[in-house]
Length: 241
Picture 1 (cartoon, one colour):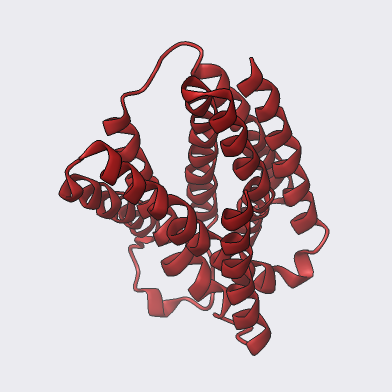
Picture 2 (picture 1 turned 180 degrees about the vertical axis):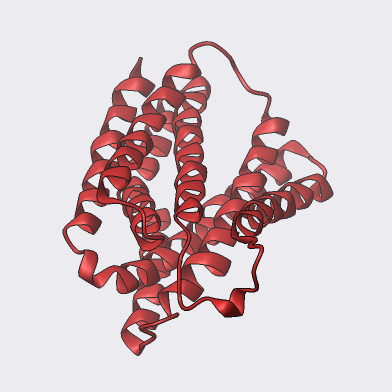
């Protein structure tokens, strides 16, 4: 029950992050630049160190984890490019965006948030101390999860109402994920593959989707600086929680 109680804090953290983006939509490109940095920071300073630690202690096959990472990367790439396929040539269009891409991105991030909650629940299966530390880490970066979700949905020309619904979904999924762990326990070898899969998802979203779009129309040193700031933010979060 401790896991569920702490996961409720992730709801508010995610929700307030999304509200921040909604109130600052005129600065969406800069927010996207920061978001890209955050996602890259999560991959390299949160997920990858955890994967490496589990590989060392569990004697797992490194190749299997690398396959999980590239599968996660290619899966979202294939989804996105399938959505973007047109009967006509792309050059016949002006600058445009695709609402379905924002929807798919938000669904992937909600899936990640669900497994954040699962991670909290599984950590409490190890010990209360580990559970609290994992919960604090998730709560700290879920503010940016809310930013990411709303930013992606709005950036791809979806409605504000749809952004609100996806924000609510993203805020609820960690609570659902934590509650689900009352019903099962997950072998560590599957958990490390999950981490690899979502590292690939986030790497693609951050580096190949959000970052190029952040500079597509309003490239500036400020946007670049915010990307670096996003990376540094996650670096500091992972050092102190």
